[in-house]
Length: 194
Image 1 (cartoon, rainbow, N blue to C red):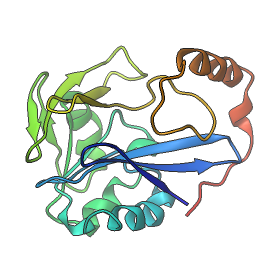
Image 2 (cartoon, rainbow, N blue to C red; image 1 turned 60 degrees about the vertical axis):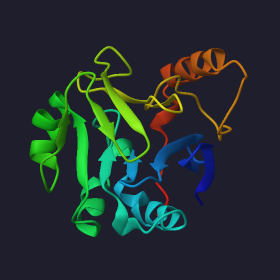
Image 3 (tube, rainbow, N blue to C red; image 1 turned 90 degrees about the vertical axis):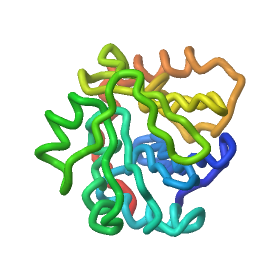
Image 4 (cartoon, rainbow, N blue to C red; image 1 turned 180 degrees about the horizontal axis):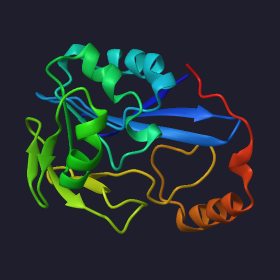
């Protein structure tokens, strides 16, 4: 079951923990004039995500659907959202828009140039391409300039059902998880909840 936490004004983390693989998948909803969903989750997670979003806003109000990089947990259910919300647009950098969204998405992505600002109402998200981090040439982050909130994915990846906000050391947790991944822990069979 998703856990919803307001991590900044009007910014909600929707966390879905999968105990079989000891991983938490985080998605972010910005409830503003033009709501933004950052990371859609896997296709199988769509019903859970739709219900979670509906507790915060009418899902039909979604305007923007962004992601950190093209991967199933980042935008696997993108097309389900686009079918549900005809006015919503995918939003990403040029490489993501031209290399993957052009082929994958039901409609073209709104392409953000480096340092371009996406305004959702009272919030301003500056797009920062990060091809060096976490793991793809299409990677990018959105930095909200009003509240200073960074929307990113897979940065300091770590296992477990993590807390929404922390002042604890996250570098060692990330290091331990990376070492654990080297031991092929993810090779176990896993079903994503739906």
